[in-house]
Length: 269
Image (cartoon, rainbow, N blue to C red; front, side, top):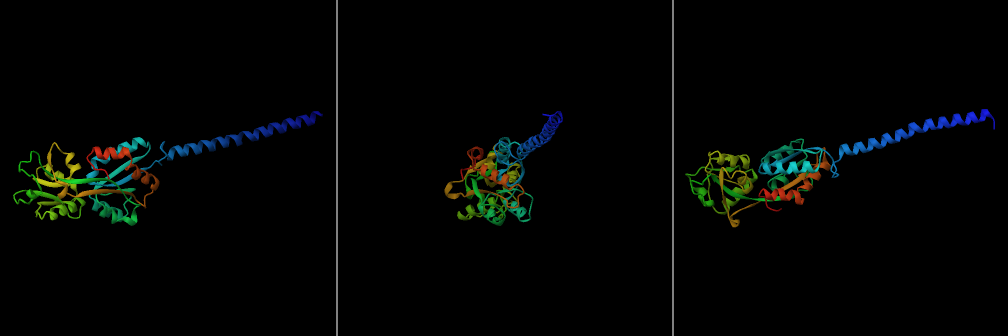
């Protein structure tokens, strides 16, 4: 074999090896980018990472703060911001196209009002009304009919608010006429009036009263005279984080979330 031919073969081998190096490097970079991209957009549980905004009924204020923290811990990289208000206000926000990802109301009727904007709702919890009185119950309020006393300063949620609707329903059923000193935009505002001593009594959810037992007394209402509130949750169709929003709504029905809700006094759905 000639020396010239040998040199040509050696040169060709070097050139081929040189070409293979950058091709292999590109393959490794692509693999790293794919892996890095997956880690950046998906948590260890497979739920897409996202900053979620959840519109939630005011009566969920305390429990959802706990639930949100638990969900974020379970899904690192996900951040949940809650906006609490009366369900009627939340529905109005959805109709106006508020940039949110999920909705949880305190009644099915409110949720039905935006069915064109939501996925199929799931009831995640139930609640019931109690009579909240000033601490120590100085006016000796023992039952619903006591709220008819004109000397008593009673505050109720406004008629368009779920808590107001439930209150009207049970008072009408017992043929009890109450003249409230004010009608509030959400149930937490009712509780606040009683806590501050601006009202002697008010109708609130059991879970609301339990957040302030150091400031108010809670008088149970018999089942036969009470109403059961249902809390439906749904992802919003216009959400930019549809998959992540659906995952959060689904999580609310899991044993972990249900324990948080029931520990706060909510009933099983």
